[in-house]
Image (cartoon, rainbow, N blue to C red):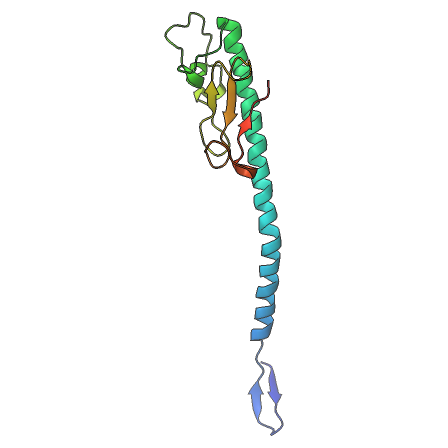
Length: 149
């Protein structure tokens, strides 16, 4: 036991621990670090979701090309991307699900990809994601992501 004598000569125990000021300084430092690190992590997460969605769009376009090679046509808008997973009634050649996992692909925000056939500007189809907000249009993370033919 650590015992000290004060000025009057009375014995007392010395107390160990942190002062209120020391605790407050540590809290402020942690707050500053959190304010700097957390936004960067969320920015990287958002950037990663955009990259994953672009890869999903590209993979889905590859599956659409395989469907085309087998059937000499792309799925109609009504058949949609479900035609890559389940055989449409009017399709004669359907080898197997064109998408691994047997599920209609979604973007990184768990929203359905958008598919329209025929597409705009003379493209055989348009394939895109509405982005983070799941709505048409937007800016930044909410911007629509289109597959480029």
